[in-house]
Image 1 (tube, rainbow, N blue to C red):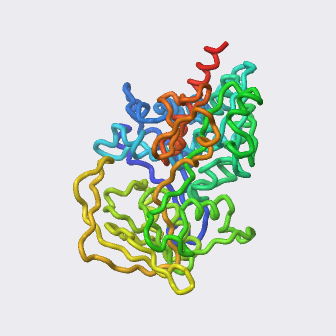
Image 2: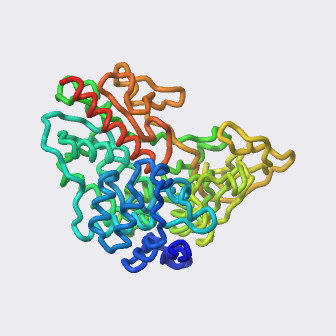
Image 3: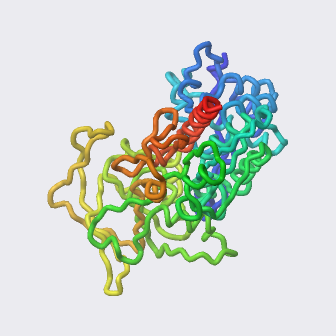
Length: 462
């Protein structure tokens, strides 16, 4: 029976070795391992995994082709619904989505859907696999703001429909959070991200970098002067949040966004790049999400003792279980039920530590997690040279300020319907710009929904 086969383990770098380099942690499956893991799939008549996938990939179908050894067919099936399989296979939280719904997971280990998707995506990149069939050009232009996952997914689907698509990116490199936010050891940039984007160029998608929409050009001018029939905003959420505590303006306090951008986009970890980045002897990262894990593991690789400070218990950590596991293997220290109340500085204005309080957990809050409550008389100090705040992000207000009729909510997120339609006619939005910081696959799902809505909108205008 297929469900009696144990889940195939994935080969990884040794923890002690990888904690000193930026090479990819997980090696992934080879063809033999992929076929063995694929043979575990029960090919359910009612595949719950498909419903749990934000882009609704036909998971049993592609896994069935992997089992048969027909990797090209598997790639074609995935391409019908996802333009970034090598990326999603690496960074998506499959354990709470497709794999979390796999029936084999009820009494054992679910099928390693993410690792199989990664295998197929990588095989396709190495062997010249093609995307889904592209329609003839229809003569209509769509502008995409941002080259992150939502923008790339929207651009891909629209290009396949025959639209003339141009993606405008504020930075000098394409990829958005895939390039500036996620470390090399989780997502190789040249090997994976650049090649996935190249596949979109093959579809006819055009890219313009160093274009800050709202400064270099506006949404109004794109539609009124440049002849774009619709605009999709996939600009993400890159504005960092801070705690507002004493000492937060000291030298050595940085946002996770800045820290990771220096390390990833500006490649501060590489000797041939002259990018300044300071970690000192000890770094404390405040937060418990995936960004916090990326920051603390990066700091470790840059040579610092690295500590996570999180105000809830490990059970409430929002980061992926796999990332927490990897961090622990690499020697990251976790101080749970701990919250900073001030940053301590020396007489030269540099960080020398943080004062924290111990927490206990009370009743659940709006998120469903138990609310942290300060334990009386529990202050203690933690010595460190750098404090990295990984507390979430919100969208940059620039587009709201420069676009007539574009509504945002109290968090600064763009107000959009389920389909991505905004208050401004012809303007659609999705991903972190709408929801606040979330996952790559949810952003992709939003981009795909918006592409469908944009197609319907333009057709209705004809």
